[in-house]
Image 1: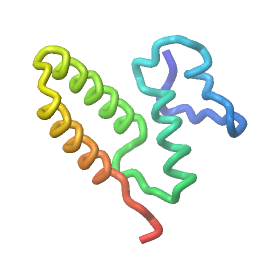
Image 2: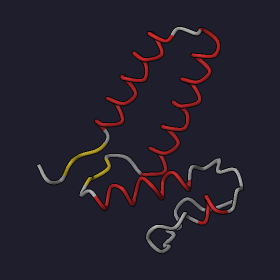
Image 3: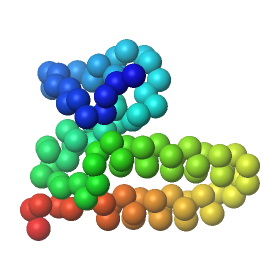
Image 4: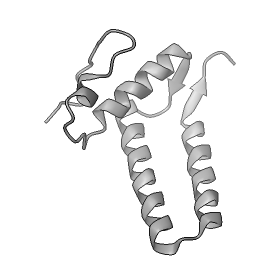
Length: 97
């Protein structure tokens, strides 16, 4: 299993090793790598570690999917998604402001 504390570096425009491997990514390494690169490229400061944010997004995505599949209520699903987006946006601070 990958150590989430290990930073990976690869050439711009190429997928991270976690994505290329095709191996399931239970620790959210690939997503956290992407979050870190996006935050650095856009001068954003994360209020939580990238790995925690990646796991949170994965959990919310799974929960939203199951909620929609079980209940089929598109309006409720959209309301929950808006709430998750607002929460994630609150975990990121724009350093340019």
